[in-house]
Image 1 (cartoon, rainbow, N blue to C red):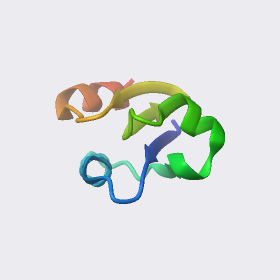
Image 2 (cartoon, helix red, strand yellow):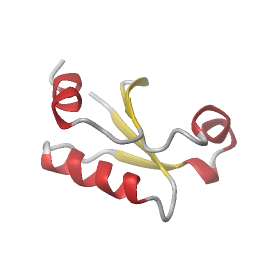
Image 3 (cartoon, rainbow, N blue to C red):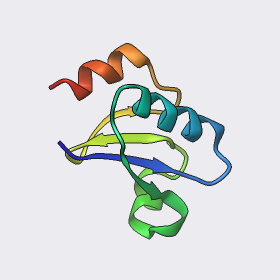
Image 4 (cartoon, rainbow, N blue to C red):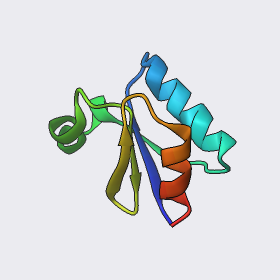
Length: 73
């Protein structure tokens, strides 16, 4: 399972998302939305965005239970 976290510098929700993923035992690959034109086009105002195997499973303020379920599949 590949987990990506689309983030932005200075985004407190992004920091919260990273902490939550780590609490759930996942170290995601972090990708900065401002450094990738494709990510910017897709997710600019939606960060943080969590992708599991390329599929969006959460964005914005994340729900721990929903994210845990998405990561267990």
